[in-house]
Length: 123
Image 1 (cartoon, one colour):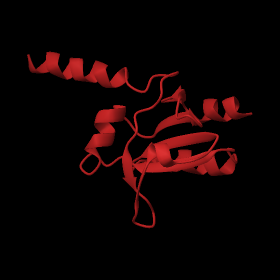
Image 2: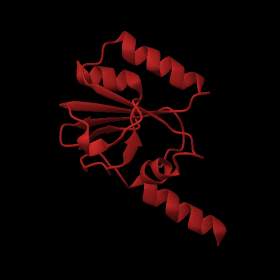
Image 3: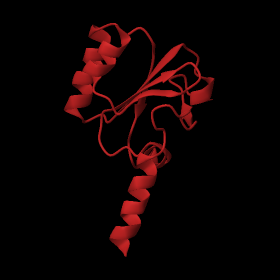
Image 4: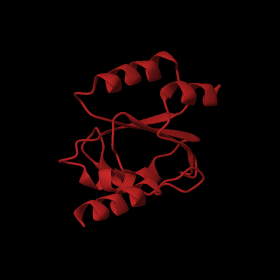
């Protein structure tokens, strides 16, 4: 029964924030120590980059983002499952890095997409 409950929860998170849907809002702490929400973040395009500090692929992806000069606002979010369990629950963060591209209305354009595909999309 425990496995069944786990799979139902997993499918539920996979169906959230689907391409074409408005993404679920969440609060976060800014670099200056203040509080904000995803919906308050302005920009024609918003790139969500969920990462883990010890993830080598995350480090390489972050370099790839800055090297290719992606023309949109980038919001990097530390996906520490102990501290940000609400992000894991809302976005189903199974691996890092997890990448989303949103439009100005916070509609998902690309979900869990490799950086190379995002770069191609933005050209």
